[in-house]
Amino acid sequence: MGKLERLAINDEGFIFDPETGNSYTVNKTGLFIIKFLKEGKSEEEIVKALSEKFDVSEEDARRDLVDFMEQLRLYGLLEGENV
Amino acid sequence: MYRVAVSGINAVDNPGPGVGIAKGLKGGSLEVSIYGLAYDAMEPGIYMKWLFEKSFIMPYPSAGEEPFIERLLYIKSNYGLDAVIPALDAELPLFIKSSSLLESYGVKTFLPTEEQFKLRGKDHLPEIAERIEVKVPETRIVTSYEELSKAVEELGFPVMIKGIFYKAYKAFNISQATSYFNSIVAEWGYPIIVQQVVTGEEMNVVGVGDGEGGHFGLVGIKKLWITSLGKIWTGVTVRNEELLSATERFVSEFKWRGAFEFECIVSNRDIYLIEVNPRFPAWVYFATGVGVNLPDRLLKAALGLEPERDWDYPAGKLYVRFTDDFVTDMSEFQRVVTRGEN
Image 1 (tube, rainbow over the protein chains, first blue to last red):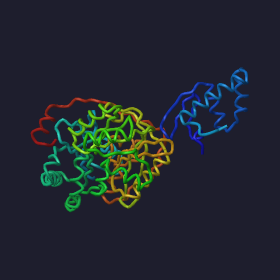
Image 2: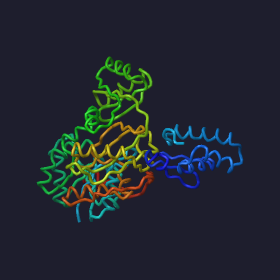
Image 3: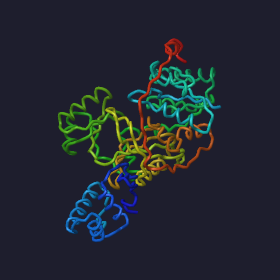
Image 4: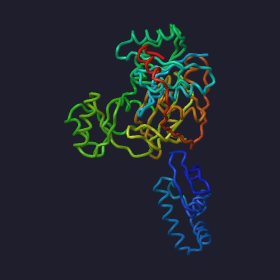
């Protein structure tokens, strides 16, 4: 089971890692992305979904997604190349 | 009704485990009457009558075995005593040495062996780590300034400067390292441990080994908030499989008997062993609170009853310690001072 699958995430964007005891908060966009990542969606699928949901260009959505995923990796919440 | 004595009832800024143990015993499945063993009339547990029915001032273990055992036998003959759960490092050697004698008088304990107790010295950590296949921060044992400067040169700053049993400081340069070295030597003597700083999550496991390689439950936690003395005030349960299986390997490899606290730093998949304590930690009530009543199980093991072994606790339970106060009569204090018991 991957790291993301183990995270306990509530609808308000509170994330608890049961392995390390660390907790995080994410905004609506972050929560949206994490839910897609947990479902194993590809980067392209998430970019499309973000662009539709938040009415931004795919280019902007991709930049934000890459940035956010880099942060997740930094915190050890995303292992390797998830998508 | 079982009569059990518990020590470490100093619920102060550096809290002992006694109050947490007593709370566990009260909430357990056995009917108990708990006695507090104290070393000072000011230990708050003495006045917590809702936990400790009676309390007794004990002679210091350093005064020798005889007065200590005599005091326990006085309690036994006057008030009845079925078991003792000692909770302080300084008492343990005496209790371990006298456990058969106490047993012959009908006072039960469930303690580590002398060899197991010795493992608490940080100079034994590399040996434990090797046998249970975990890592240990790179370590040098030093007894002089010369060795100290050689060690820090090899390890590079920052380093941890530690006593064998107590105190740990992080030093960022040679003058800090030397000053911590001096302060630990002045208080606790030689040798001094110089250790590489490992970054990761500090996690602890509390458990009770059955003495045959199994255990009566483990609970893993992470300290979220500690005081300036390093004492946990807020924590959360974690389920880290690497950590829990390393702890199980420790219990089975050393056939650990009795309570213990296993302190580690977890860095990704690596477990670094930091310390093993041969007794309950002060936060032991956390285990009771998540359904693994270790003090109750340890008492059962001491009494020769079969303790539960389930330990499927949930991750994400929060531990909150707080300070509290109450008012009692001066006469309570007077009795402790004049009679040595109350």
